[in-house]
Length: 67
Image (cartoon, rainbow, N blue to C red; front, side):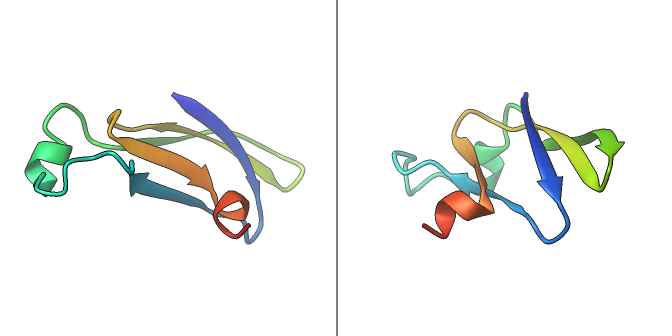
């Protein structure tokens, strides 16, 4: 599980990895597990999220995609 801290107006993206087979269906993508998002902590205007996703998905902080 990946743990991320987010503040107001920050986000995350959950995307297929670049090397994923383009013919894979949504059912195939989630055959093993669904995406699970858990709020683990809230302090001083920050939230900590735990994100568990199938290995063929990647989880990115929005500021990494914007660069």
